[in-house]
Length: 70
Image (cartoon, rainbow, N blue to C red; front, side, top):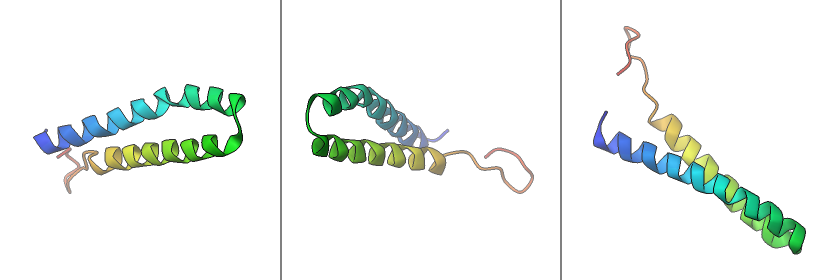
């Protein structure tokens, strides 16, 4: 696996872990304060998850014409 691909996978996994680590405080924050900051925080969290997922799908090995993994 190339170095660039490993870095992208690491970045995607790091973003996904950070997203879920912030999920619990966001829920607590929602019940402790008013709703607008939580909505903004949730949108940012969702955006980071979508970015990490798209990176993960972009670096996913694709089969060549013979069906072998590249």
